[in-house]
Amino acid sequence: MKHLLVVGASGVIGSAVVEHASRLPDWQVLALSRRPPDLEPEARYRRLAVDLTHPARCEEALRPLRARVTHVVYAAVSEASGLVAGWRDTELMRRNLQMLQNVLRPLAGSPSLRQVVLMQGTKAYGAHLHPILLPAMEDAPRDPHENFYWLQEDFLRQISAQEGWSWTVLRPQIVLGGACGVAMNPIPVIGAYAAICREEGSACGFPGAHVAIWEAVDARLVAQACIWAFEQPHARNEIFNITNGDVWVPGHQWAAICGILGVPVGPPAPVDFSRFALEKSQVWDRIARRNGLRRIGLAELFGESHHYFNLLMCNGQPAAPWPPALVSTIKIRQAGFAPCLSTFESLRYWLGRLARRGSLPAAPPQPTHPEHVA
Image (tube, rainbow, N blue to C red; front, side):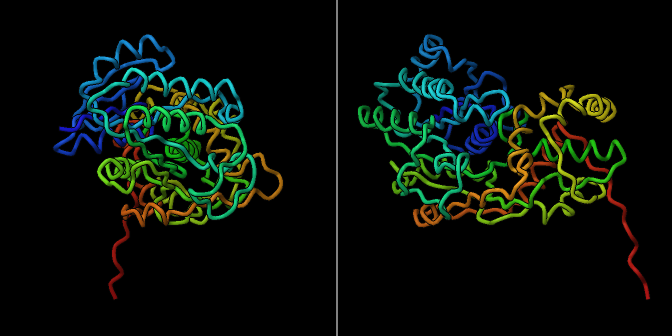
């Protein structure tokens, strides 16, 4: 039996890993998070509530697990309010390093731990600071900027060499998933924006300042990649980019998105989502009451994701935005990971899932038109 510890289990990736691994017959899952993950009822797991910033509490909670845990997925992150400014905050970088240390140090000396999977992203290529060389590839020299990715990765390499563990680093692009109240998930922002447009009787225009190009990845695909990395020798001690496999332009698909959300499409109209959460909070409360949704406010639904969505929509950029941050996924495919997904279908699935779970209102029934009979 394999015993998986998922750290950051209430996040976009962590929750998907818990669900995926819990369906596998030879895996037992321990979900570590401060708040309960929002999972499907059939998910089989145990939960451990721990604040990762407290070394003594982590030691007390994790030391007894040394003889049992065989694999770790580390998907936790600490972000600043407003999100983007925190990406250059050296104190926040140190906090993220300490959180990883607080998890792995109590597991040192484990006779059972085999491998750790760590999450990074395109900030590894400096995508938050400057245009990057396209496509970004894993063997490129480290971009010369301060980043908690480097602090965590160097520590993971060091402790793994000392303990005889293997490690894998995954670098997902824009992650689409089912977690709300998190730092970077476009799904609840898109769904709430459309619902508020429908409530106010206004057309739902594309809310970006520029037509951006995305490479996204479904959280379910990242979860599959974690289990693949544990079972594939070619993945040990390697770094991999991961995406759905397609390049996607949300502005070109906006009419189709409005269609699945049951709201009329309007002309493009950039929206400052950092203000939107405050200005539309009462509208959202009205929607939630009438539709019997979970009683959480718009700010709680978004977490910091509305700031992230602003960035993805190129809002606040008066000039043309930087070229898209596109990455190569050749390495992970050549190593044997072949699954792929349509980004539009990922979006459709997660919007439907949040509606089914009571976080977003269901789209109104679409009108049906009788077939024309000649």
